[in-house]
Amino acid sequence: MDKHFRAEIAGLRAIAVTSVVLFHLKVSGFEGGFVGVDVFFVISGYLISRNILRDLQRSRFSFGQFYIRRTRRIYPALIFTVVATYLIGALWCAPDMFHDLAKEGTHALLSIANIQYWRESHQYFAPNSDELALLHCWSLSAEEQFYLFWPLFIAFAWRLKRTFQIIAATGLVSLVSSVVIARADPLAAFFLMPFRIFEFAIGALVLQLEAKPVLGRTAAEAISAAGLIAVIASVLLFRSDLPHLELAYLLPCLGAAATIWTGSRTRAARLITNPAMIGLGAISYSLYLCHWPVIFFGRFIFGEVVNHLGGIVTMTAVMVGIATAMYFFVEQRFIQPSNAPPVNFWKNAAAFWSIVLGLVAVTHTTFLSKGFAWRLPEAQTELAHLQDFPSSRDLEPVNGPIGVQLLGDSLATQFFAGLSPLLKELNIGLEPLAGAGCPTLDGVALKATRRDECIEVRDKAMKRLAETDLPVIYTQKWAYYDDATIDYEYESEQKLPPRTGSFAKLELALERTFEKIIARGHRILLIGNQVYAGCVINRKRLLQGPLPHAPQPPCRQRSRDEVEKSNASMDQMLSRIQAKWPDKVELLRPEVYFCDARCPVDKDAIWLYFDSSHFTVAGSIYMVSRAAPLFRKFLSPN
Image (tube, rainbow, N blue to C red; front, side, top):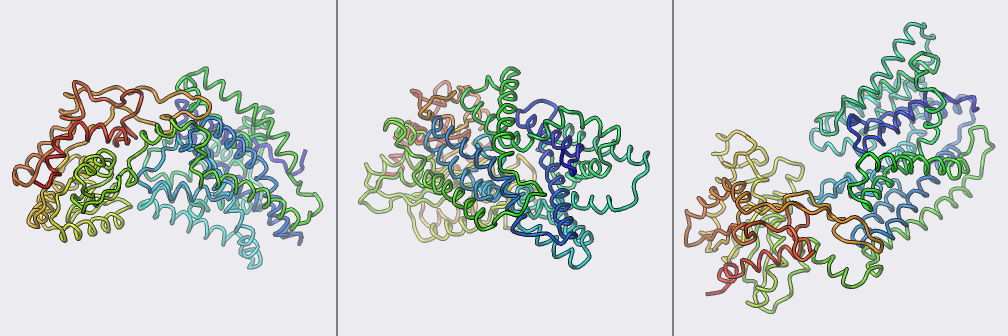
């Protein structure tokens, strides 16, 4: 056995990977299993810093050899995982889903997956985590980014003879920055490497504790037990929906550090250093890599059945089998022992980059080709379009002048597909003045992270409305903009508390906006509250790939009475607005047209909803066709 082998670290790895797996399997009681990643970061900080400092002290440290060892340790299994996921995706995924999977593969191979997921989390139609086949690669990307700069940092600190003081200061800056940034952008604190450095630093600082006098037996036993309890308690008690977890992450991190510091000879450590735990720790990296694709494709291909006990046991067995094979046939073939003679850096780097860039060329080509739609019959492509979200491409070109302006957020743009035939019939064009997730109301700004972007959208729309007198179709996700979500710039807002579920600011802003644009000569078709679907829709399930998968489960159809009751207070507020200008404002209540006795979610096996809030192209066409007389009357020049 390697003389540097640490049994308690293998046990910690086993706890960490088991926690993550049980969390992703959604096993009750393990809602805090995501902290397994934090434990891994502490372990990495300890081991990597130990190896660098040991080589520096022996005057044999080489940046080139460090990077080669890390690459050979991390990348072969990662490449295997990405390639296997890509090939399974090619067989089972429809083009839209395969397009997204290929993009994930590119970013995972380039070790920037965490940056991709952070950036995309701010998009209005950000994908759900259950729709991302390589989501778990964010932590590997963060770790690879850490490896890129940490040797330089440690070497610099060591030359200054202030190694641990500089590590401690850097870790403190990272922790404080994480807490501060999380107030404005929690997902930046979660995904981005600079805000995770404090976890690696905690692991590195264990080395200084080890240099101190040996702990007494009683103290070691107490610290070891407390450390293990801290890690396990975090797994069992934390939840991902708890706010402001940044400081709470210190608990599992300090627990892991305490377990490493006290070693493998305590009674607590013996609980995690039995052969089963050491064996699980050995395959922990491969198990981490393969567990999420197994869960992702298990749920995608077989549906809800895999979330029951039999499915969970089967997926777990498959994961362990794949991880064991990966450990012996992939990991072990490429690992370079610390006592191995140096290898040629440039030769190894060239081989590595040729493989990675070759694979990136494949994944990026797949992305650019929109997921290789040729894999499916043309009828499937048309079906995919009908079940996609409407875009400006669904507006057929007309020869006539602009005849109507469309104002609002994404609930306005969803009408593109449905309005297109009417606009062509009347030979008038449409000018969209909409921004996804943005309230286009005079004086209104979001309190959320997209505030500045939405203010720009709002001001551009208001300026354009002031330049025309065209009819305006206006709708938004009204219930999204309550008094707790928006700021209202005008004086009357100061008297209104930021209450959730109250829409006093929205009503004031609507009145002011309508006063301005009606005075300019605009007529307004005000579309009321959306008819929401009665279920969560996984849009990746709506289409079959070359091989079949479990379809989206059927949705409960809401009754028209149920929808009218849920929309009543908002419709009453919009009716008050309409009543102030009865000859200039027409109110369209969607449930009156979209619903019969019940409100459909799909028709003739074609889904009318893109997600629980938005229509698909088919849904847009269905809605507008049912309300065609009202739209036609409003749009007609006379």
